[in-house]
Length: 464
Image 1 (cartoon, rainbow, N blue to C red):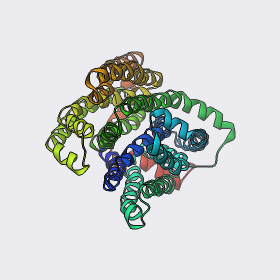
Image 2: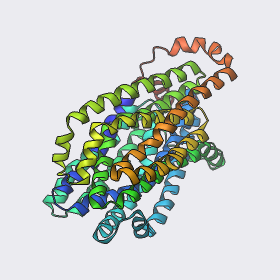
Image 3: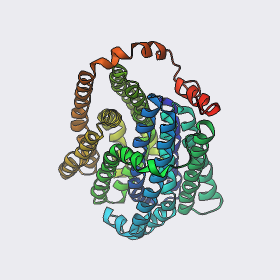
């Protein structure tokens, strides 16, 4: 579940990194800075889509874990419609004030003009990308991580192919990077909806009498999850604003790091998305010991993965600086991040895992509390203080300092919540002994899980 998700995410994030690389070949530092500003603004909409996808994955997986296939399909349909409408409204509102918002981030002059152009080209795709993220969450909820990967992987390939063609071949330059991303986002949406419907039939005719109930239950998870997800761009916005005070070189360095991080740590982003359906299905099946096991192993995996990434970044630091022709503050930031700062990302990974647990054991408000605390009580004061003494490096360190504090507290709280849940349902594991024996050998791979087999049988005989 994790690695198949990571492949798709890595392909998508790698293209963002390639965008910066190709634009750096044009020899204008303002281009990378403009993409950094635009990416920060657009990430608000992507975060909203991620928050909605968390509710999709949680509610669909819980219904499937309880063997209520029709309810899962109905929920998937109603959630998809509601998500698209909400994302469309949000995109229109943000598009109307794009220039003012970018200026508020610290963009000015030609950098502001470029950032506005990039933002307005991609803004219409935000509802489709957000819905695609939710649909891939539904695929993971069905245990079909492989087809979920196909959507994001295809988008990454399309973007990587179109980037050099539109930037250099057609001669569109900066605009070519934006249009390549435009096409890639639409490809992700088309493939996601095709895979979900053709293989699982999860989108059915809406039932208005059940829609409000499903949306209410969905928002009990996605409401707090959206606030949780939106906390990250709030922190990112302040980081970008603080970095802008040190000039375009510092902003360019921050933008490059912002593209390296999702590629380097794509596995951890995918991990939080992968354990959600596993926790949700086991909670629906009342197998609480498996929920605890999932959390423990996810934390151990996070530690091992961060250590591996640190070794790779440490050894390739000078090469990365040379590839992006980083100078001044940009060079300093890249070297510091690769040499030692990246190790602190472990605490971000822990926070991801803890929040995924909260969202899928019906404790979503806790995820909101910890993410908002990280972004407001963590990032803002640490960035402000450390920037005064360490300059641009202080901004980067301040952004991670909040994760150290609140990620640690969130992990302890997650285990305590599982203890309370298990104490309140001591009879669940005993009542599920027979089911545990029956399901312990399920091969959790695409098209072969018990859930996938049940969906296939149900498609053939809906009355069964």
